[in-house]
Amino acid sequence: MSEREELMQELMNVIGEEGCGVSCEEATVYKDEEGWKIMLEGFMAPWNLGQTLAEAKMRIREYGSMGFGLSGHQ
Image 1: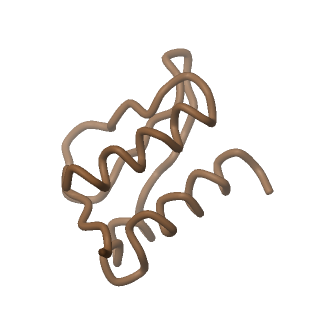
Image 2: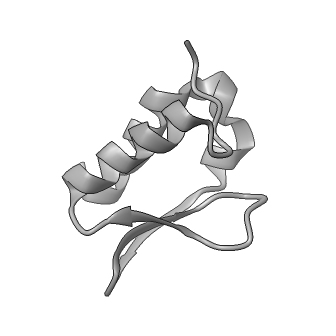
């Protein structure tokens, strides 16, 4: 599994299929010179996830728990 696939899986694990819906299916996860980023449908700019895979996974969990456009399942 690639790092990108791991991040998409983490997104689905944290948010769940019902909470994620089209936003996750249409999500663009990529790494550039600044680190990992995710662009979700309905948002104008990508979200910075961190430099490493571990940081990116932690940030996804953080965003999900705080409800930043992602509704995690309880």
